[in-house]
Length: 93
Image (cartoon, rainbow, N blue to C red; front, top):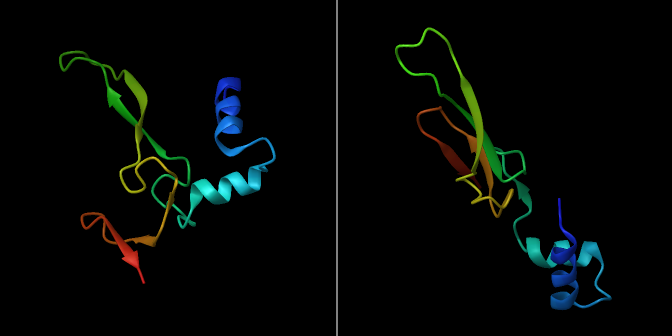
């Protein structure tokens, strides 16, 4: 969610007559492909077990990390498709 101060800063930077579509096009540039790893959100939710090893229960904590494929942008310049899980991601031509 954007804050009011963010909107004011954008208006000062890009001018009052710039539309949201123009602003998106300028910021997005040539990153037109939605990131397949984070689905365009720029972050990945992970979980870790906070319980100690001697406890007989699970105490999961969920936290967000920045997507390493798109660097938190949500979109990439190239289209990526998954390879085998141990091989990571490959760029599609």
